[in-house]
Length: 419
Image (cartoon, rainbow, N blue to C red; front, top):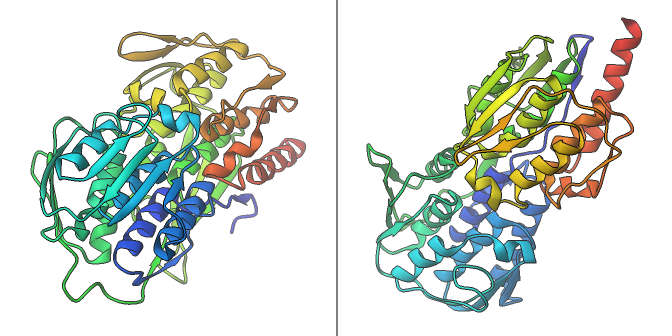
């Protein structure tokens, strides 16, 4: 390791972890899952699946974990029994209708007990015989992934037709990659509208298959933002790979190259399958960033905050689904950036940021959203007295975020002292 390489420990991907947990459950636990995410969402899903397997409860509360709730909804719908599924108030406001409608069209009995198309729901689970179903994926790719993951349970497998373009389509590709790695056959039509998943093999899947979960590219986006603020410091993220990853958010490397951050993948000289990614800010960036975030909405908060801090103008499209996350992220970003002096405006199709010169604000609200907390948490590198309210929100995806940020802060102070 170079003497000025600063090691940053990223969490494992909760998105990949959650898919393997569901697949392991439906296949009868043949897989040995290593390096599982320790994020709140993954621990919650692990707990709820354990309760389902042991039969210790019929009510499942998903807090504000949309992925957990959508995956469980599909799983409970095809699992014989009487179930109920609920969550926090924010989760009750998030969309579930397209997934519910698709499951109902297969014959599943799901009743929304408060508002149609939303949680909470009462479920009479049974294993449907129908294999062909349509789904509207425009609000969330998680609807598609939830259906694909339970497809192997169906006697004839599943043929799923998308009625619109999917949001966050790389996450559907991630689901297919997990299914294929597990030994389940899948196929996709040329226009990417029809997905087929074969049923579980009659003899079951290979026992004791060891699966190691990748490090998380979504979390890496905040390290990229930090690198943009502290040029000249090389940050190394072990266990991360550009060339050997199924995560769509690795596109963050291309986005931040335009914001003045270079990326290099490094292979271990001793073990070719052990890789890391190093990033370094150059202090040189474009003056205008135009980008469509339809396939990578989780990257918008750190990218937007970085643009605001560096005085980069931005025009960002593919933003509508950001209103449906743990918070209304468009509203949260607009409100909090205004307190720093940045004027974010909206049109019918895009978010616009003029060249800004940020000033410090005393506090920033996290809006009960882990990605908002982390995006503004990076600004503490520029404004040390900034206080992020409810900093514990980060445990939803990146439990060690504040510790890793302190590592970068200390490295920056040492670098400045040497200069």
